[in-house]
Image (cartoon, rainbow, N blue to C red; front, side, top):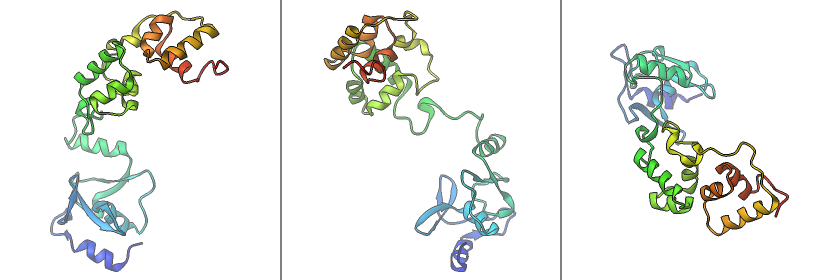
Length: 218
């Protein structure tokens, strides 16, 4: 799978003096990093593949029995799932629980919980997704996901008034209503305002405007 030259280059960067074979070269996210075939790979992954002479199965991870990120001793490595890897981290005290970081605690988060509450408030005031997105320097799809409750799910849904307002169970809209809704949406009236005006859910307005429902009315 790997040439003798690559294998020799790899193990020249390994210190085998201890029970754990320690990677002594560059690292990435705390793990050993080794460039091969023009791509940087995790050193422990390469070690497993060299030892087993086959590729890591698709969708699987190479996990550490020793919980030492710099260890490349193949005897300390095993094939597992993302769940296995998380459990190992918990047991080693690296993580406090099996739950992934959410909201502003996530490393990739660009917004804070205070931002989310402000976004909801601006939306209730009638600002469009595009206007809100511009204020917070994010994409309109990000704003849409927040307002539909598809992201930041840990925030109490009670703050999302456009979801919690009671609507009639079987709202009756006419063809004329649908045409008016689409025209008002073109004029910049927000989905929230239209939902209140016609006593229907936010999602009902969205589906009408985007022709997901009432497709025959144009």
